[in-house]
Image 1 (tube, rainbow, N blue to C red):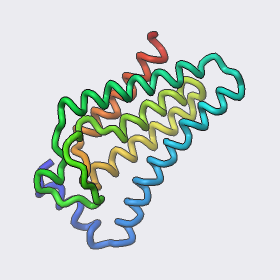
Image 2 (cartoon, rainbow, N blue to C red):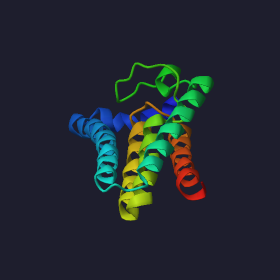
Image 3 (cartoon, rainbow, N blue to C red):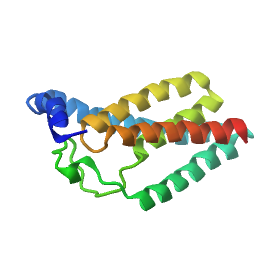
Length: 163
């Protein structure tokens, strides 16, 4: 995404403070929702003495660790490091590819989908919305969020359905 394209997208939002505040709130709320729902699932599985609990812990944990190592090695710059003025305040440099926020939402969606398919689908919709917000907010490039989503789905697919 070029600086001009980003400004064409973000410029109208900068002039509407309430809409910008809603976008920022949506970014935080969607992230928080997913991070609350994952431990809730683990708790419910634990209480039910469900044998799938260990897999629901290991698949996301191992996937998250591997993705974090990959991001560290690649160390791709973020849009605001290349001259884009983000809508969302962010200070961290590098580690943009793939988006770990989006990856996490999608691997959590796959984990819920393994147990409760409709909930997994709902979280995938939330993940797509979060991906769009991260791009509009100027903290990720489209390729970052696409790769994060694809990697999250692949990690869940391999972890839950092929192993």
